[in-house]
Image (cartoon, rainbow, N blue to C red; front, side):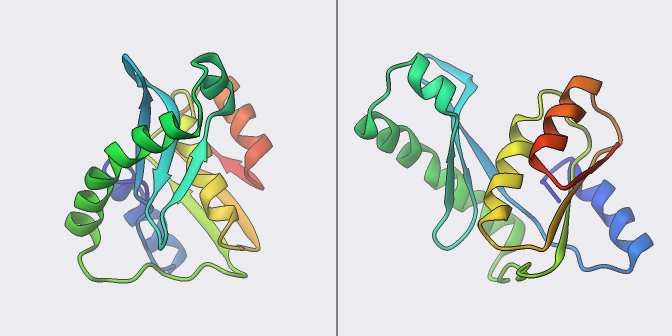
Length: 151
């Protein structure tokens, strides 16, 4: 589940499938002067996964030092959320499994794309995105990243 909104939806999905439930904590890294525009995102892990939005990085002419500074600025919030949502519980291993990423919707799909890319690095057999609502163009974009999209 992608906290917070995805948790109540994912609880129902997990119950229906008899599947375990875990959290995937994602923190957006905003562009300089435009914090709502994602230049990158950090996904909780050991170490945390960083996924860059290359198009935005290039548009803002950000170098490695700029990116490192922006990312470092968001790490405390990612850690705070990890501690608040997960405590000391270790994440479930998804290697070789089917991972279903659930959120309460996907407007632009940016957070979900980051989640998919981060989970790919953890070697699941398959990634399914499950959202109750999303624009058709976002579903099409997510379908290029995930193995399946259910909306």
